[in-house]
Image (cartoon, rainbow, N blue to C red; front, side, top):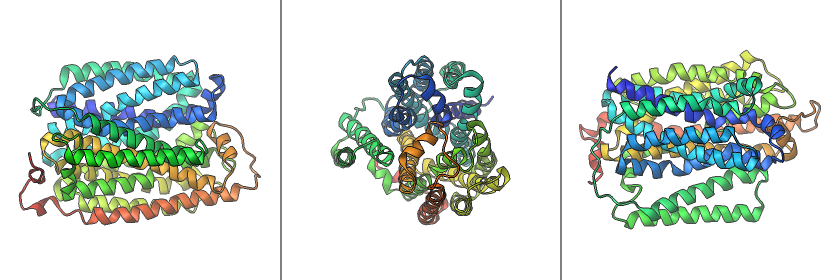
Length: 483
Protein backbone atom coordinates (compact mmCIF):
# COMPACT_ATOMS: atom_id res chain seq x y z
CA UNK A 1 0.00 0.00 0.00
CA UNK A 2 1.32 3.46 -0.90
CA UNK A 3 2.30 5.51 2.13
CA UNK A 4 -0.32 8.19 1.47
CA UNK A 5 -3.11 5.60 1.70
CA UNK A 6 -1.66 4.23 4.93
CA UNK A 7 -1.83 7.79 6.28
CA UNK A 8 -5.39 8.38 5.10
CA UNK A 9 -6.76 5.08 6.43
CA UNK A 10 -5.08 5.49 9.83
CA UNK A 11 -6.02 9.14 10.35
CA UNK A 12 -9.57 8.50 9.18
CA UNK A 13 -9.90 5.71 11.72
CA UNK A 14 -8.58 8.03 14.43
CA UNK A 15 -10.93 10.85 13.46
CA UNK A 16 -13.90 8.48 13.30
CA UNK A 17 -13.15 7.00 16.71
CA UNK A 18 -12.73 10.40 18.38
CA UNK A 19 -15.81 11.92 16.72
CA UNK A 20 -17.99 8.92 17.62
CA UNK A 21 -17.51 9.76 21.28
CA UNK A 22 -18.84 13.28 20.78
CA UNK A 23 -22.43 11.98 20.58
CA UNK A 24 -22.30 8.30 21.49
CA UNK A 25 -22.85 9.25 25.12
CA UNK A 26 -25.98 11.29 24.36
CA UNK A 27 -28.15 8.24 23.75
CA UNK A 28 -26.75 6.46 26.82
CA UNK A 29 -27.46 9.33 29.26
CA UNK A 30 -30.84 7.97 30.50
CA UNK A 31 -29.21 4.61 31.31
CA UNK A 32 -26.23 6.30 32.98
CA UNK A 33 -28.63 8.42 35.06
CA UNK A 34 -30.40 5.28 36.30
CA UNK A 35 -27.35 3.11 36.98
CA UNK A 36 -24.80 5.61 38.37
CA UNK A 37 -26.29 6.47 41.74
CA UNK A 38 -26.55 10.13 42.64
CA UNK A 39 -25.88 11.37 39.10
CA UNK A 40 -27.51 14.79 38.62
CA UNK A 41 -28.61 16.56 35.46
CA UNK A 42 -25.57 18.84 35.84
CA UNK A 43 -23.29 15.76 35.98
CA UNK A 44 -24.85 14.38 32.79
CA UNK A 45 -24.42 17.73 31.07
CA UNK A 46 -20.70 17.72 31.88
CA UNK A 47 -20.34 14.10 30.74
CA UNK A 48 -21.70 15.22 27.37
CA UNK A 49 -20.21 18.70 26.97
CA UNK A 50 -16.99 18.40 29.00
CA UNK A 51 -15.44 16.20 26.32
CA UNK A 52 -16.18 18.78 23.65
CA UNK A 53 -15.06 21.75 25.76
CA UNK A 54 -11.66 20.23 26.57
CA UNK A 55 -11.22 19.02 23.01
CA UNK A 56 -11.98 22.42 21.49
CA UNK A 57 -9.84 24.32 23.97
CA UNK A 58 -6.63 22.36 23.29
CA UNK A 59 -6.63 21.83 19.53
CA UNK A 60 -4.63 24.93 18.61
CA UNK A 61 -2.17 24.32 21.46
CA UNK A 62 -1.52 20.75 20.35
CA UNK A 63 -1.33 21.80 16.70
CA UNK A 64 1.51 24.19 17.55
CA UNK A 65 3.27 21.56 19.68
CA UNK A 66 3.11 19.12 16.77
CA UNK A 67 4.88 21.64 14.53
CA UNK A 68 7.61 21.81 17.19
CA UNK A 69 8.01 18.18 18.26
CA UNK A 70 6.56 16.05 15.49
CA UNK A 71 3.02 15.44 14.28
CA UNK A 72 3.19 11.66 14.16
CA UNK A 73 4.68 11.47 17.66
CA UNK A 74 1.88 13.47 19.27
CA UNK A 75 -0.78 11.83 17.10
CA UNK A 76 0.36 8.36 18.23
CA UNK A 77 0.37 9.51 21.85
CA UNK A 78 -3.21 10.70 21.35
CA UNK A 79 -4.29 7.15 20.44
CA UNK A 80 -2.70 5.76 23.59
CA UNK A 81 -4.26 8.42 25.85
CA UNK A 82 -7.71 8.16 24.24
CA UNK A 83 -7.72 4.36 24.56
CA UNK A 84 -6.63 4.42 28.21
CA UNK A 85 -9.24 7.07 29.05
CA UNK A 86 -11.95 4.99 27.34
CA UNK A 87 -11.05 2.02 29.53
CA UNK A 88 -11.26 4.22 32.63
CA UNK A 89 -14.67 5.57 31.55
CA UNK A 90 -16.03 2.02 31.38
CA UNK A 91 -14.87 1.44 34.98
CA UNK A 92 -16.38 4.65 36.43
CA UNK A 93 -18.46 4.12 39.59
CA UNK A 94 -19.76 7.66 40.07
CA UNK A 95 -20.81 10.56 37.91
CA UNK A 96 -17.79 12.57 39.08
CA UNK A 97 -15.40 9.81 38.02
CA UNK A 98 -17.05 9.55 34.61
CA UNK A 99 -16.72 13.32 34.10
CA UNK A 100 -13.01 13.23 34.98
CA UNK A 101 -12.29 10.32 32.63
CA UNK A 102 -14.34 11.95 29.84
CA UNK A 103 -12.22 15.10 30.19
CA UNK A 104 -9.10 12.96 29.86
CA UNK A 105 -10.64 11.32 26.81
CA UNK A 106 -11.17 14.81 25.36
CA UNK A 107 -7.46 15.54 25.75
CA UNK A 108 -6.63 12.37 23.79
CA UNK A 109 -9.08 13.25 21.03
CA UNK A 110 -7.54 16.74 20.77
CA UNK A 111 -4.17 15.13 19.92
CA UNK A 112 -5.90 13.10 17.19
CA UNK A 113 -7.99 15.91 15.70
CA UNK A 114 -5.24 18.52 15.75
CA UNK A 115 -2.73 16.40 13.84
CA UNK A 116 -4.75 14.33 11.35
CA UNK A 117 -5.22 17.12 8.81
CA UNK A 118 -1.55 18.12 8.91
CA UNK A 119 -0.34 14.51 8.51
CA UNK A 120 -2.64 14.04 5.51
CA UNK A 121 -1.52 17.32 3.93
CA UNK A 122 2.12 16.27 4.37
CA UNK A 123 1.52 12.93 2.67
CA UNK A 124 -0.64 13.96 -0.31
CA UNK A 125 0.28 16.22 -3.23
CA UNK A 126 -1.78 19.40 -3.53
CA UNK A 127 -3.76 18.00 -6.47
CA UNK A 128 -5.14 15.18 -4.28
CA UNK A 129 -5.55 16.88 -0.91
CA UNK A 130 -9.18 17.86 -1.37
CA UNK A 131 -10.20 14.25 -1.94
CA UNK A 132 -8.08 12.98 0.98
CA UNK A 133 -9.19 15.67 3.43
CA UNK A 134 -12.76 15.16 2.23
CA UNK A 135 -12.70 11.48 3.16
CA UNK A 136 -11.16 12.31 6.53
CA UNK A 137 -13.62 15.14 7.19
CA UNK A 138 -16.55 12.90 6.28
CA UNK A 139 -15.50 10.49 9.03
CA UNK A 140 -15.62 13.36 11.54
CA UNK A 141 -19.23 14.29 10.82
CA UNK A 142 -20.39 10.71 10.21
CA UNK A 143 -18.87 9.71 13.54
CA UNK A 144 -20.86 12.33 15.41
CA UNK A 145 -24.12 11.17 13.78
CA UNK A 146 -23.35 7.45 13.77
CA UNK A 147 -22.57 7.75 17.47
CA UNK A 148 -26.28 8.26 18.12
CA UNK A 149 -27.18 4.97 16.41
CA UNK A 150 -24.25 2.95 17.74
CA UNK A 151 -24.78 4.32 21.23
CA UNK A 152 -28.40 3.19 21.19
CA UNK A 153 -27.52 -0.31 19.95
CA UNK A 154 -24.64 -0.89 22.38
CA UNK A 155 -26.48 0.52 25.38
CA UNK A 156 -29.55 -1.60 24.66
CA UNK A 157 -27.62 -4.82 24.02
CA UNK A 158 -24.63 -4.62 26.39
CA UNK A 159 -25.11 -1.70 28.81
CA UNK A 160 -23.72 1.82 28.83
CA UNK A 161 -20.17 0.68 29.63
CA UNK A 162 -19.99 -0.96 26.19
CA UNK A 163 -19.91 2.41 24.42
CA UNK A 164 -16.40 2.79 25.89
CA UNK A 165 -15.36 -0.89 25.59
CA UNK A 166 -15.57 -0.65 21.81
CA UNK A 167 -12.75 1.92 21.71
CA UNK A 168 -10.21 -0.29 23.46
CA UNK A 169 -9.36 -2.92 20.80
CA UNK A 170 -9.66 -0.36 17.99
CA UNK A 171 -7.43 2.07 19.85
CA UNK A 172 -4.75 -0.53 20.60
CA UNK A 173 -4.66 -1.64 16.97
CA UNK A 174 -4.61 1.91 15.58
CA UNK A 175 -1.91 3.01 18.04
CA UNK A 176 0.39 0.14 17.01
CA UNK A 177 -0.37 0.78 13.34
CA UNK A 178 0.47 4.49 13.57
CA UNK A 179 3.63 3.79 15.61
CA UNK A 180 5.10 1.36 13.09
CA UNK A 181 3.80 2.73 9.77
CA UNK A 182 3.55 6.53 10.03
CA UNK A 183 6.65 8.69 9.69
CA UNK A 184 7.58 12.34 10.08
CA UNK A 185 7.69 13.92 6.62
CA UNK A 186 8.25 17.58 7.50
CA UNK A 187 11.64 18.58 8.88
CA UNK A 188 11.16 19.88 12.42
CA UNK A 189 13.10 23.06 13.14
CA UNK A 190 15.10 22.52 16.33
CA UNK A 191 15.48 24.95 19.20
CA UNK A 192 11.92 26.29 19.19
CA UNK A 193 10.54 27.48 22.52
CA UNK A 194 7.10 26.81 23.94
CA UNK A 195 4.95 29.92 24.24
CA UNK A 196 3.75 29.11 27.76
CA UNK A 197 1.75 32.30 28.30
CA UNK A 198 0.10 31.99 24.89
CA UNK A 199 -0.89 28.38 25.54
CA UNK A 200 -2.39 29.20 28.95
CA UNK A 201 -4.32 32.30 27.86
CA UNK A 202 -5.75 30.68 24.72
CA UNK A 203 -6.83 27.40 26.34
CA UNK A 204 -8.16 29.19 29.43
CA UNK A 205 -10.02 31.80 27.41
CA UNK A 206 -11.67 29.38 25.00
CA UNK A 207 -12.59 26.90 27.76
CA UNK A 208 -14.26 29.51 29.99
CA UNK A 209 -16.02 31.16 27.06
CA UNK A 210 -17.39 27.85 25.75
CA UNK A 211 -18.43 26.80 29.26
CA UNK A 212 -20.33 30.06 29.80
CA UNK A 213 -22.19 29.95 26.50
CA UNK A 214 -23.12 26.25 26.62
CA UNK A 215 -24.03 25.95 30.32
CA UNK A 216 -25.95 29.20 30.96
CA UNK A 217 -28.98 28.44 28.73
CA UNK A 218 -29.71 25.22 30.68
CA UNK A 219 -29.61 27.02 34.05
CA UNK A 220 -26.35 25.31 35.03
CA UNK A 221 -24.92 28.73 35.91
CA UNK A 222 -26.26 31.65 37.91
CA UNK A 223 -26.36 35.07 36.19
CA UNK A 224 -23.33 36.15 38.21
CA UNK A 225 -21.35 33.02 37.31
CA UNK A 226 -22.25 33.49 33.65
CA UNK A 227 -21.03 37.10 33.58
CA UNK A 228 -17.83 36.19 35.45
CA UNK A 229 -17.02 33.29 33.12
CA UNK A 230 -17.82 35.35 30.04
CA UNK A 231 -15.68 38.25 31.23
CA UNK A 232 -12.83 35.92 32.20
CA UNK A 233 -12.91 34.20 28.82
CA UNK A 234 -12.83 37.47 26.88
CA UNK A 235 -10.03 38.81 29.10
CA UNK A 236 -7.93 35.69 28.54
CA UNK A 237 -8.37 35.89 24.75
CA UNK A 238 -7.49 39.62 24.68
CA UNK A 239 -4.36 38.80 26.69
CA UNK A 240 -3.61 36.00 24.22
CA UNK A 241 -3.72 38.32 21.20
CA UNK A 242 -1.50 40.89 22.94
CA UNK A 243 0.95 38.14 23.90
CA UNK A 244 1.14 36.65 20.41
CA UNK A 245 1.98 40.03 18.90
CA UNK A 246 5.02 40.45 21.15
CA UNK A 247 6.48 37.00 21.68
CA UNK A 248 9.30 35.90 19.34
CA UNK A 249 7.95 32.38 18.73
CA UNK A 250 4.14 32.62 19.19
CA UNK A 251 1.87 29.66 19.70
CA UNK A 252 -0.36 30.95 16.88
CA UNK A 253 1.23 32.88 14.03
CA UNK A 254 -1.38 35.63 13.60
CA UNK A 255 0.08 36.50 10.20
CA UNK A 256 -1.67 33.40 8.86
CA UNK A 257 -4.89 35.41 9.01
CA UNK A 258 -3.47 37.78 6.40
CA UNK A 259 -3.86 34.98 3.88
CA UNK A 260 -7.11 35.47 1.99
CA UNK A 261 -7.85 31.78 1.44
CA UNK A 262 -7.02 30.88 5.04
CA UNK A 263 -9.05 33.71 6.55
CA UNK A 264 -12.09 33.22 4.31
CA UNK A 265 -12.08 29.48 4.94
CA UNK A 266 -11.94 29.96 8.70
CA UNK A 267 -14.80 32.49 8.80
CA UNK A 268 -16.98 30.37 6.51
CA UNK A 269 -16.22 27.25 8.58
CA UNK A 270 -17.15 28.97 11.84
CA UNK A 271 -20.46 30.28 10.51
CA UNK A 272 -21.23 26.90 8.94
CA UNK A 273 -20.58 24.99 12.16
CA UNK A 274 -22.57 27.62 14.07
CA UNK A 275 -25.49 26.83 11.77
CA UNK A 276 -25.34 23.03 11.88
CA UNK A 277 -23.74 22.27 15.26
CA UNK A 278 -27.03 21.67 17.06
CA UNK A 279 -28.96 19.96 14.24
CA UNK A 280 -28.70 16.44 15.68
CA UNK A 281 -29.18 17.57 19.29
CA UNK A 282 -32.38 19.47 18.47
CA UNK A 283 -33.70 16.57 16.40
CA UNK A 284 -32.92 14.19 19.27
CA UNK A 285 -35.11 16.34 21.54
CA UNK A 286 -37.82 16.41 18.88
CA UNK A 287 -37.79 12.70 18.08
CA UNK A 288 -37.70 11.61 21.73
CA UNK A 289 -39.97 14.43 22.89
CA UNK A 290 -43.67 14.36 23.75
CA UNK A 291 -45.07 14.62 20.22
CA UNK A 292 -42.97 11.85 18.61
CA UNK A 293 -42.06 9.75 21.67
CA UNK A 294 -39.49 7.53 19.92
CA UNK A 295 -36.98 5.43 21.81
CA UNK A 296 -33.29 6.30 21.59
CA UNK A 297 -32.41 3.65 19.00
CA UNK A 298 -35.27 4.55 16.64
CA UNK A 299 -34.43 8.25 16.98
CA UNK A 300 -30.86 7.46 15.94
CA UNK A 301 -32.06 5.51 12.91
CA UNK A 302 -34.12 8.52 11.78
CA UNK A 303 -30.85 10.49 11.46
CA UNK A 304 -29.09 7.99 9.17
CA UNK A 305 -29.93 9.83 5.86
CA UNK A 306 -27.72 12.72 6.96
CA UNK A 307 -24.70 10.41 7.35
CA UNK A 308 -25.33 8.50 4.13
CA UNK A 309 -25.51 11.60 1.95
CA UNK A 310 -22.49 13.12 3.64
CA UNK A 311 -20.49 9.91 3.15
CA UNK A 312 -21.24 9.92 -0.58
CA UNK A 313 -20.97 13.62 -1.39
CA UNK A 314 -17.94 14.54 0.76
CA UNK A 315 -15.24 12.58 -1.11
CA UNK A 316 -16.76 13.40 -4.50
CA UNK A 317 -16.80 17.10 -3.67
CA UNK A 318 -13.20 16.93 -2.48
CA UNK A 319 -12.12 15.18 -5.68
CA UNK A 320 -13.86 17.72 -7.93
CA UNK A 321 -12.54 20.68 -5.95
CA UNK A 322 -8.99 19.43 -6.55
CA UNK A 323 -9.64 19.89 -10.26
CA UNK A 324 -11.85 22.96 -10.36
CA UNK A 325 -11.13 24.87 -7.13
CA UNK A 326 -13.06 25.03 -3.84
CA UNK A 327 -15.17 28.16 -4.23
CA UNK A 328 -18.06 26.85 -6.34
CA UNK A 329 -18.50 23.58 -4.41
CA UNK A 330 -18.15 25.09 -0.92
CA UNK A 331 -20.61 27.90 -1.69
CA UNK A 332 -23.08 25.52 -3.34
CA UNK A 333 -22.95 23.34 -0.23
CA UNK A 334 -24.03 26.28 1.93
CA UNK A 335 -27.01 26.91 -0.37
CA UNK A 336 -28.06 23.22 -0.32
CA UNK A 337 -27.86 23.22 3.48
CA UNK A 338 -30.04 26.33 3.64
CA UNK A 339 -32.77 24.55 1.67
CA UNK A 340 -32.60 21.59 4.07
CA UNK A 341 -32.86 23.82 7.13
CA UNK A 342 -35.81 25.74 5.69
CA UNK A 343 -37.65 22.43 5.21
CA UNK A 344 -36.77 21.38 8.79
CA UNK A 345 -38.30 24.67 9.93
CA UNK A 346 -41.70 23.36 8.75
CA UNK A 347 -41.74 20.24 10.96
CA UNK A 348 -45.09 19.52 12.55
CA UNK A 349 -45.89 17.68 15.77
CA UNK A 350 -45.08 14.39 14.07
CA UNK A 351 -43.18 13.28 11.00
CA UNK A 352 -42.34 10.05 9.21
CA UNK A 353 -38.89 8.68 8.45
CA UNK A 354 -39.18 9.53 4.76
CA UNK A 355 -40.52 13.03 5.38
CA UNK A 356 -37.52 13.75 7.58
CA UNK A 357 -35.12 11.99 5.22
CA UNK A 358 -35.49 14.65 2.51
CA UNK A 359 -34.26 17.68 4.50
CA UNK A 360 -31.63 15.59 6.31
CA UNK A 361 -30.32 14.33 2.96
CA UNK A 362 -30.01 17.93 1.79
CA UNK A 363 -28.22 18.97 4.98
CA UNK A 364 -25.84 15.99 4.70
CA UNK A 365 -25.14 16.67 1.03
CA UNK A 366 -24.58 20.34 1.77
CA UNK A 367 -22.09 19.57 4.55
CA UNK A 368 -20.22 17.23 2.21
CA UNK A 369 -20.14 19.81 -0.59
CA UNK A 370 -18.84 22.52 1.73
CA UNK A 371 -16.57 20.84 4.24
CA UNK A 372 -14.09 18.98 2.04
CA UNK A 373 -13.22 21.81 -0.38
CA UNK A 374 -13.17 24.38 2.41
CA UNK A 375 -10.73 22.43 4.56
CA UNK A 376 -8.49 21.66 1.59
CA UNK A 377 -8.48 25.38 0.74
CA UNK A 378 -7.38 26.23 4.29
CA UNK A 379 -4.64 23.60 4.45
CA UNK A 380 -3.28 24.45 0.98
CA UNK A 381 -3.03 28.14 1.89
CA UNK A 382 -0.30 27.75 4.53
CA UNK A 383 3.39 26.74 4.31
CA UNK A 384 4.44 23.22 5.31
CA UNK A 385 5.97 24.40 8.59
CA UNK A 386 2.59 25.77 9.76
CA UNK A 387 0.34 22.84 8.84
CA UNK A 388 0.04 21.56 12.39
CA UNK A 389 -1.21 24.87 13.74
CA UNK A 390 -3.45 25.33 10.68
CA UNK A 391 -4.98 21.89 11.22
CA UNK A 392 -5.53 22.55 14.91
CA UNK A 393 -6.98 25.99 14.25
CA UNK A 394 -9.39 24.71 11.59
CA UNK A 395 -10.80 22.01 13.87
CA UNK A 396 -10.91 24.46 16.81
CA UNK A 397 -13.05 26.81 14.73
CA UNK A 398 -15.30 23.86 13.86
CA UNK A 399 -15.67 22.66 17.46
CA UNK A 400 -16.10 26.19 18.86
CA UNK A 401 -18.84 26.93 16.34
CA UNK A 402 -20.63 23.69 17.17
CA UNK A 403 -20.39 24.39 20.91
CA UNK A 404 -21.77 27.91 20.46
CA UNK A 405 -24.50 26.41 18.28
CA UNK A 406 -25.56 24.06 21.09
CA UNK A 407 -25.63 26.98 23.53
CA UNK A 408 -27.80 29.05 21.18
CA UNK A 409 -30.13 26.12 20.55
CA UNK A 410 -30.62 25.58 24.28
CA UNK A 411 -31.28 29.32 24.68
CA UNK A 412 -33.98 29.27 21.99
CA UNK A 413 -35.56 26.05 23.32
CA UNK A 414 -35.62 27.18 26.96
CA UNK A 415 -37.23 30.48 25.98
CA UNK A 416 -40.36 28.53 25.05
CA UNK A 417 -40.20 25.29 27.06
CA UNK A 418 -39.75 24.86 30.84
CA UNK A 419 -36.18 23.76 31.55
CA UNK A 420 -37.54 21.00 33.80
CA UNK A 421 -39.34 19.44 30.81
CA UNK A 422 -36.23 19.60 28.62
CA UNK A 423 -34.29 17.92 31.41
CA UNK A 424 -36.83 15.07 31.40
CA UNK A 425 -36.30 14.51 27.68
CA UNK A 426 -32.53 14.89 28.09
CA UNK A 427 -32.35 12.04 30.62
CA UNK A 428 -35.00 9.87 28.99
CA UNK A 429 -37.98 10.81 31.11
CA UNK A 430 -41.52 10.91 29.79
CA UNK A 431 -43.46 14.01 28.88
CA UNK A 432 -47.22 14.23 28.34
CA UNK A 433 -48.28 14.32 24.70
CA UNK A 434 -50.97 16.86 25.64
CA UNK A 435 -48.62 19.19 27.53
CA UNK A 436 -49.63 22.85 26.99
CA UNK A 437 -46.12 23.83 25.84
CA UNK A 438 -45.87 21.38 22.90
CA UNK A 439 -46.78 23.96 20.23
CA UNK A 440 -44.24 26.36 21.73
CA UNK A 441 -41.68 23.53 21.66
CA UNK A 442 -42.26 22.94 17.94
CA UNK A 443 -42.09 26.68 17.26
CA UNK A 444 -38.77 26.94 19.11
CA UNK A 445 -37.37 24.14 16.91
CA UNK A 446 -38.45 26.11 13.84
CA UNK A 447 -36.69 29.18 15.24
CA UNK A 448 -33.44 27.22 15.70
CA UNK A 449 -33.44 26.25 12.04
CA UNK A 450 -34.37 29.76 10.88
CA UNK A 451 -31.38 31.01 12.87
CA UNK A 452 -29.23 28.36 11.20
CA UNK A 453 -30.36 29.66 7.81
CA UNK A 454 -29.23 33.18 8.74
CA UNK A 455 -25.76 31.92 9.69
CA UNK A 456 -25.50 30.07 6.37
CA UNK A 457 -26.46 33.21 4.47
CA UNK A 458 -23.61 35.02 6.23
CA UNK A 459 -21.21 32.13 5.50
CA UNK A 460 -21.87 32.45 1.76
CA UNK A 461 -20.16 35.86 1.71
CA UNK A 462 -16.60 34.80 2.69
CA UNK A 463 -16.99 31.50 0.84
CA UNK A 464 -17.93 33.17 -2.45
CA UNK A 465 -15.34 35.95 -2.09
CA UNK A 466 -12.41 33.75 -1.08
CA UNK A 467 -10.97 33.84 -4.61
CA UNK A 468 -9.59 30.96 -6.64
CA UNK A 469 -6.22 29.34 -5.81
CA UNK A 470 -5.08 30.09 -9.36
CA UNK A 471 -5.73 33.79 -8.78
CA UNK A 472 -2.50 34.09 -6.81
CA UNK A 473 -0.51 34.12 -10.04
CA UNK A 474 1.50 31.01 -9.31
CA UNK A 475 2.63 32.25 -5.90
CA UNK A 476 2.33 29.84 -3.01
CA UNK A 477 0.14 31.63 -0.45
CA UNK A 478 2.35 30.26 2.27
CA UNK A 479 5.16 32.45 0.98
CA UNK A 480 3.23 35.47 2.25
CA UNK A 481 4.02 34.35 5.79
CA UNK A 482 7.55 35.40 6.75
CA UNK A 483 9.94 32.71 7.91
